[in-house]
Length: 252
Image 1: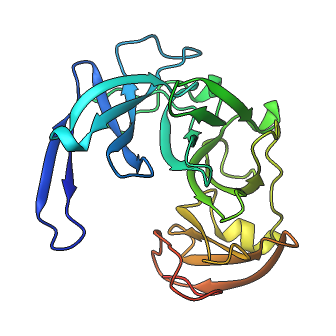
Image 2 (image 1 turned 90 degrees about the horizontal axis):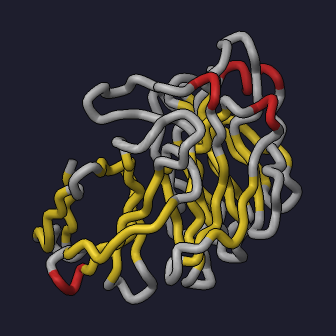
């Protein structure tokens, strides 16, 4: 119901922002290129659930103590991570497709009618400039986490909300203009070990390699993003967050 903005130099608090009436933060934010504006994924939880587009992007002015300037639609339900594209204008938004309410933590209200999407939105106007989805029969793959390569390639990490015995791909790559999310293939044994759950994705600094984690599987899988092929698996108990280290081919 609130978020803190901290100084990167000494972690001094710069602002505490409370969610607006009828809104609830969904856990991720992004900055404008000049660092003045903060964009946050939020839940319009009083709107109808199900097929309604209940996600919004709140806009905050950090030069004015985090004053809320307004909002625009996320063009989907349950937006989670959002990232600014290299053009400095487009926000990539992971609409997970899951409707929730803050009074019922962790209760997923629309599993049967989920409609996840990767939305590309002009941050200046809030207009939808592109949208990519999975095939309809894979509608229970919730799009959760994103990473953006220097050339604008988008990696998507997903979590499967369907029957546990089904094994659907959990990582995909896309570019603005794509309407379909092409999945990356894993060996059957590695996909099974991920247990339907990708916790985070990250490109290395060169955009050549992609790491995807699964805390449920205790593993990180690595892909060559250029050839779009699986490279290797690293066993790491309960690993989730992943980020690029300072050198190509390195991750934290």
